[in-house]
Image (cartoon, rainbow, N blue to C red; front, side, top):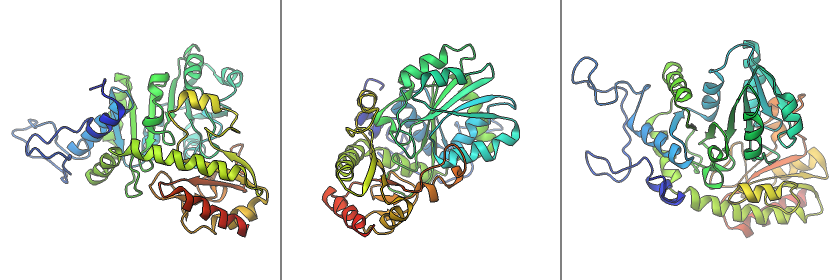
Length: 382
């Protein structure tokens, strides 16, 4: 029920015991089609691309966790993003936050521009710049908070008032992957659509790739539902099951991720070889007050820059023992990467280009002393 606390919803929302067997865990409906009692007469499911009971449970779960009315699941976070962009027409104008995931920039800049969509990147912290960028053709404002990889914040409530006051009444879409619905719920703050790469924190175990959308608007939901079926970028039931399983411990993991990340950010901020640390709840973050007001905790992502630049950053990234050098994030294990050469390579030469000396950490749930010691040893090699 909506009045239940988040921790209870994470375990039960959309997942009643199986009515056929009483199974407490949602079954994996590993089937491609469903028998019909008569022509066009079925039990709610006819073909697995169109619908699957395991997927339905996950879609209902994300809707509940984001305080939304509808949920949709896709084969990846980028498939979810792509489906949203498909709802627009040539000539439509889309504003984008000036610090976003490299894959998002690649899809917008390298693919959809050729179909006549216009994209403009703005600093989400500058409301005057945002107001000035809105045009009669603006149909959506796409943003992340915290951003990837600089962990910048967007004041969602204020931005929503600003955008909705404009005559175009553009949609506000928020990629909530870094924060998860446990830390913040953008729909409650005025957003229209929430997107997740559930591959990350929602799954939490680096064993499934999946994307999710949550929203309240019935008309937009029907359009996205049509595209989900028509384009067919849907997840399989096993991946849906794995994400459902991961969601059940989301609140427990996010608290530990944040506890460890806060300690790691303090260690890095005091290190003589580190020039800057990016962490929403760290005292040096210029938007710390907003982060503390808008988020439950600071999350598990930390980025930092080294005084030695790219050469030092590469030595650190290649010198850890516990932190695995790998793309992605949000699993129980700690990861380290260089965005400029890895996840954000597509932004090279653009206004969103990332400093080659920036290191991004996905701080896991290992013992924090071991994580700090691992980074300390790597920094000594730099």
